[in-house]
Image (cartoon, rainbow, N blue to C red; front, side, top):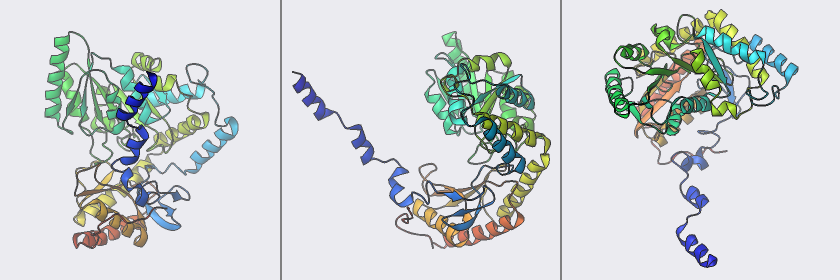
Length: 429
């Protein structure tokens, strides 16, 4: 009997590996031609404005090293000293069990004060941190209202949410109002639950700031809490660098402020700041931290040094913005479409397919020595290309001038059809 059941199952049950081999996914299907060049490239040398790619010097516009702290001498010394003193194992264990330290608590206190919040909690990674925080905050009767262009970490956090969620059109406050009305009606019908609105301080692809001030104003009409992911705003926006809330004058209206250390701090880790009682709740209920090893001491001490430099050396942010304005104004003067960015993130919008985009990338890298990130279908609609340039405090006027020249010339080639190819060039290796 058992043999017969197994035989029937074999006829109807697919091998999960066979399914994956047949369909490698929208990006994976190009891996044989793209790996090591268009995807998973390897940059060599000291992190900075110029690095090596396949042995060639490149002007690099693809690193989120906004303030240039990655190779700042004080940062390198703090990292090295902490590693020598503690190694990468200390503290050993999850923070709740055996992995806490005075340095962890000091960093949390300094981050909270910087963001004008009562308390903050450290997280090992931004992506897993905000996903797990959403899971901890919201139950099955709660409703989440979120921006349509929220980062993947937020979308994946929403996948964990067992309750209702309503999406509003990107940065459309009127539509946010409508979704809050729907959410409020559902809560009233259920007679239980609450509402969490999630948006971003700066949207990392387009560079536009979230409509934080306008969303905060909706609190006069609806009852909800606001969570803001400000990964690209922390350290780059606001008078002190405290982010998009400070920039827009509505920091008090942000209930939970989240950012990663992977951008302006050029490090590893993340944090969420807010009311002490809520941060304490997250601290005792966030699964990604309760069941994970504590952030190693060199990262914690290194991040303390980075935060000190961020707070006390505003000239780093000033230099970043000087470079960003020169780059953005130069592109606009040459007729490029950079969208609605009001941050240092600099997108360049063009028309073309995936094969054309890859041919253009090759020309930029091989002949102009420009290395930057490109986004194509399926991330964005077919027929469109987005280059995303990330200016930093360590870029130079020469870098900007050479880059503007390169994009002007390659755009002319794109418009003239010189990059039309049938297939993605085979550059794997």
